[in-house]
Image 1: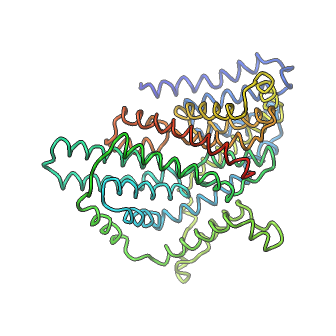
Image 2: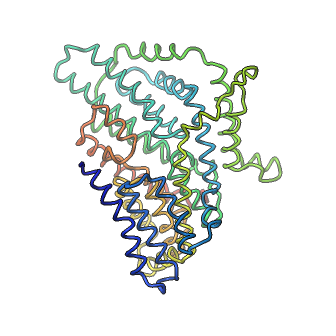
Image 3: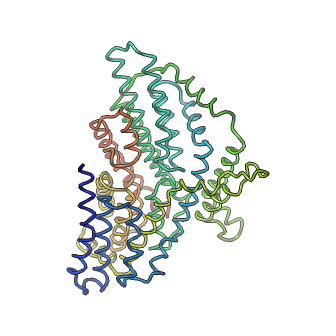
Length: 486
């Protein structure tokens, strides 16, 4: 039995055991009569989320069963979070991303971006970074890394095949190029997701909590005002660290790379009408997200919001015909088998758990207790929370971490009289900064599996990028968040 299997087996029994022990050991007079039950359920869920003893999405359904059974809230109340507007926002985003992938528009965009940046070692890494970052703003970080990997492997193989008699120095440069290219794809796939509210699951979890706790709709355009600069600065830092500091490759030109990209573009053929229609709907949706405030002003009412724009874009993918006579549309219902439905359940379960913590007074007590016992200044508090999040996200799911941690951060902010969104958003960004280990994120695991990265290289690069992430997120968040007024 492997160490991972042993951890899962232990976690499988430890979760329910913690629930039982806490249910009987926490007195009913603790905070409120059902607070102990909620803490017991939370302990069970955290145990299973960390050990992955059960699928994380199934674990998220526990409150839907246990809250009504234990008298925390009614079934109707427990089910409400699973219809949160943020869940439908992400669902619409998933549908749009699915259309991009189905019709290979994402690959065409990526190849054209790579083509623009030249054929030197650093130019190719920059091209892959730009393509990966742009795509991960809109589609799954994992899907982006999976798509970019075979193209990158082809370029690396091309370099090896064109230089069979390389000396030691050339081999070192080639190894650095392969290593830098793979790390860039893995890291930028996570970084790019920070730029938009639908770019990565933690962002949507944060938006859902902001709506639930404060009835605050985190608008797509306002998110980008801070998310895009954070992602750009982190992306530039990643590129500079990899190509200039850690793994310089000194390759002025990679023979055959132009032909390889041209060949792959040729294989895609001319842009087809279905791609044009996907691109049109994608652009229309993006414009709706970004310009919804002036458009609502034009209409004289709040007709548009991020969620209905996303769902409208998703619906159009099913309603826009490619060939009406044969009843062929951009997407068909069978395509939705590839939608990550589990993520939507995970969001619902996390919001339901947070609602239980809020309704029983746990969050308020945690926040007021920390606030009363802490003399830390707001900037130092923000920095400390960012550091804690970056460390924790290396070892557990970023979605699970944000689900558990953000309500606590909100409570701390309320207790100290700080804008909770100003404190919560940097923590959300930090949750995407897992760069040190292959197990930290799926994109890390995908590029590590290529065989071009050694563990010590990933740890070294990831540690430096983690430090850069902490500095950049802290400085930008503290400087701009209050001015943006989320």
